[in-house]
Length: 113
Length: 112
Image (cartoon, rainbow over all chains, first blue to last red; front, side, top):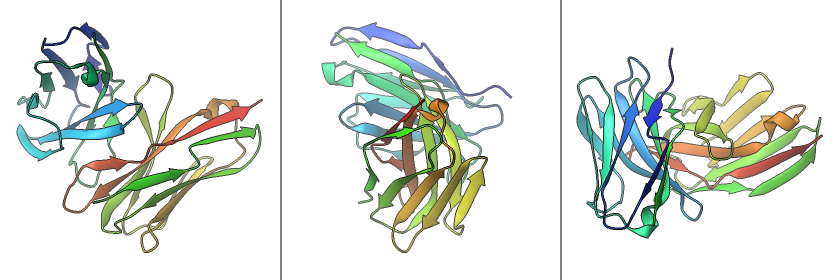
């Protein structure tokens, strides 16, 4: 079974731009979560989608948004990029979300200049 | 608010040594606890998942225990190998929040 895939793997943007990251979960998984990883803050939860509905949201500004499609693929969007948004963005999938193992993708490395 | 702490932040051991990584959490109302491994610049690899009703889980040379009442989990690695060198992360899934809350990790280096 193919693992979680994320595209693109690397992105370089400038301040003020917007960016869209994509995540394809493991086949059959309906829950997709997004995390931001930085050296200072570690891994922080952004949001979780389950069957196209946002089920949970972390403490991030409204510039961070996401959605999930009927095939469970998910996208996250960051508008008006700031230097502090530079991070590794990780996506995780699981079959149910609340009790199952979370499987992570390789991440998208975003650099904001 | 749930907080997860991992001690030590870094650990260096010679090959073949048995070792224990520690994880503590402040709120015992958890659904489960998961241990991950992360290699530099890569995503997370799930190692073990312990449900709140379980005391331990084993996979090969790895054994994870959970003591909810004391808010602690340990990851035991037997006969360490250089390939075990990575950052090990502990994460809990809380009651009302539902998302994973991570510790900052323990960076393990196993010297040949």
